[in-house]
Image (cartoon, rainbow, N blue to C red):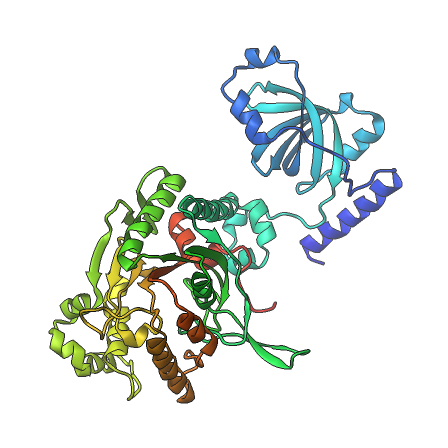
Amino acid sequence: MTEENEIIRQRYEKIAKILKQGFNPYLNSFKPDTLVRDLRAKFDAQSAQELEKISQEFSVAGRILRLNFMGKTNFLGLKDRTGEIQVYLNRSDLEEKKQWLLKQLDVGDFIGTRGKIFRTKTGELTVYGKDFTLLTKSIRPLPEKWHGLTDVEARYRQRYVDLVANPRAFAIMRTRARIISLVRRFLEEREFIEIETPILQSIPGGALARPFVTHHNALELNLYLRIATELYLKRLVVGGFERVYEMGRCFRNEGVSTWHNPEYTMLEFYMSYADFEDLVKLTEQMLEFLVRSIHGKLLISWQGKKLEFTPPFQRARMEEMVAQKLKLGNEEIRKGDALKKWLKARGIELKPEDGWGKALAAAFEQAVEPEIVSPTFVTHFPVEVSPLSRRNEKDPEITDRFELIVAGKEIANAFSELNDPADQRARFQGQAQARARGDEEAHPVDEDFVRALEIGMPPTAGEGVGIDRLTMLLTDSPSIRDVIPFPLLKPE
């Protein structure tokens, strides 16, 4: 029997004894009136002499993170959702049965207590509990040195343990929740309205990605988990919602890496009577607001790299960046042969029907994107890789689109929206032809969306922001698994 199994066996025996003594090891009747955060805010700066004059009692509850039994004198580290504080229990203050129950406590148990606040001889702020209530008996032991574990996957698989034993993991999830709240506040202050759109879709669209497939039995219909919220949000724009957004889960049937999880959180928002230039400014404002709110400054560090979020961010056209890196002229890029040759030399073979646009995007991803550190708007993507973007009026082979690249990865993607139904249908048909040739990331023609555009969509710009990746940057996390509460893992 392993040490852990022996501990589990012993704790089940304790539960049997606790029940026999008339105590409920899973009680639901204690109501704390004070959070640890509030006690520390009020009393951390006060001396022992000042605390002696305070007669008020406070009730607190939480999980025991440490136990120190010294005869009649017992000290416990108690943690609630806001922090940890020491609790002092003296056996002399307890009735006989409670003295026995005190000995049954283990690290991981939940208790509640009530008492005055004081400072120990070592100066630690402490609650003097005159009594205590066992609320939940923990059966499995918490790891003593969680940071020392080499099995990183165990942290992701047992996130509930990670959150208890690893303060940084808990802080990351709190920051993630705050980022989402701040984004909503930022958009709603600018009159954006959040509306939920379907997760199950009969035609997946809004991005070039492979979807997950499911089946509705009653309708005998194959459905897809959405890869983006875009096409339904733009239907709402057609219906009169001039500023609309959704913060929701999206799903892409692709590989897993430090930057990719098949299920992720995407922010998409749409703004009528705006173009992608307006979204450049709005994106700068939003990130400035988020970074300053989280860090109190605009120069932050991510994995040793300095990221400066003071507007205006750097900006360059995709063609110019690739041309400079590969030392090619504009005419050479538009022909595409030099790009395909460069890619082939690095083991990247494009399909015969792929044009210069796909070659340019592939070369950018290989040669340029990984070297971008500071926030940079990469603009004017080829039409070939931008099936929903508005063509540039001066150069119809490129679109009014940008991606915001930070630390070598795409954080946001935005463009002036295509609202010409004939152009949209032609691009959908091109996608359908690519799908027929075996491209699983291309999608069928969405005739209903074309019909919506025929009703009329005002000039509009839209943007998608990866919330998980943004959280990685703002919490200095090296892997997307660190910022997703329960990332996808293979079954044990």
